[in-house]
Amino acid sequence: MRRLLPFLLLLAGPALAQTSPIIDRTDMPNLTTGVDSLRLSVAGPVLPATAPPLSRRGANQTWNYAALTPTSQRVETFLPASTVTATSAFYQLTFGTLFGGVNRATVASPQELPLAAGGLLPITDTYQFYNLTAAAAVQQDFRSVGFGASLAGTAVPVTYVSQAQQDVIYRFPLSYASPADSSNSYFTTPAATATVGYLSQKRKRVNKPDAWGTLTTPFGTFQTVRVVTRLEDHDSVSVGGVSQGFDVPVTREYKWLAKTQHVPLLTITTRVLAGQETITGVEYRDIYRRIVRLATRDAATDAALSAYPNPSAAGTPLTLTLPAGSGPLTVSATDLVGRQLFRCHVAVPGKVLTLGPDTFGSFRGMALLTVTTARGTATRRVVRE
View 1 (cartoon, rainbow, N blue to C red):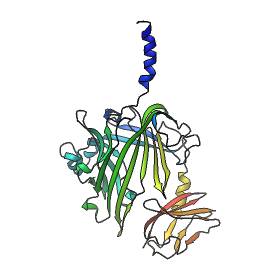
View 2 (view 1 turned 120 degrees about the vertical axis):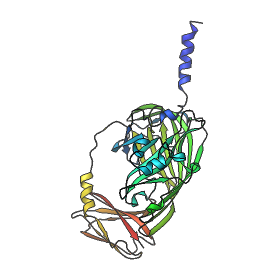
View 3 (view 1 turned 180 degrees about the vertical axis):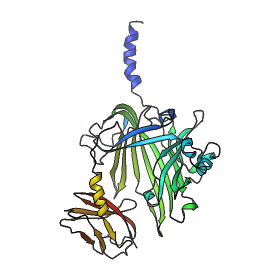
View 4 (view 1 turned 30 degrees about the vertical axis):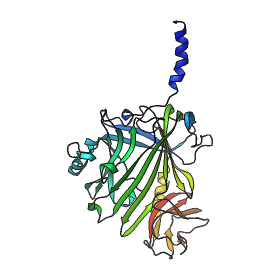
């Protein structure tokens, strides 16, 4: 038996290793040191030719994304919710340990509102508040319980309409063997913001573990479980007297999770546009890397660009002022959901460019107009009435 034991262990070792990681609450942001700061690299939305297809699913897969190249980096920061709630009595009453109730938060992170039009209101210092359920809870999860932002110097909390309609990010334990789960959430900005604008969102989130295996990125090689999140959002926005309600194109997040990593090692985001699933974002956990930026160039273009009249009537021309010596350029416009309204190339522009009456077609509402030149890129919000 002693002679057989090493042989049996050798056979058992690979078999034991070939299992899906089981993600639990301890693999979420770790606040034992007070702050959890995680560096993420952002890559372009066009995957390298050597990257595996997103359709690769099932047990014991191998994904090699080592060829990803960062175009920028950001730091995802998580901190104890009490650190943020201590700055405002409104936050204390809404998300605090003593008064928060169903909105009690344990984790906070500087985050934008999850809305296509979230940047239209004059708000700053935005936070997302999360609750990570206690270890003794029968059903453990990691969920968003609301948001906070500063409006004219006053902290304004934004909560979901009920505990049953909070956004559940993950339910634990989570592994390849876990069934798909879903949540339906709904939040609105409070009446205090009505004079400057209004935002609301209804969301259906469906999480489905569809694969596990070995993931390689520039950050390293890890055993992971892949979760595909499907997001169906309906956003409503009212700013400056212009109101819109719209269904956001279906978004999918392909997320590779590993033990002790706190955030997905790789997230590839797609949207269904014109019936096609199109990659719109790629980011992965990484170390610090020196990246040459074009911020100065873009700043010069941004300073020179203007659009007038704004607002303008549908069926009338729109005039743009451009940086001197821009050279050939591209002008494009999208609505607040990201649907392209038009795209055109101008070979020899002057300092002023007029977009004809039919450029926007019959579109009415708020649009994002982007000018791309050899000297940089700039975007303006325009309203067609």
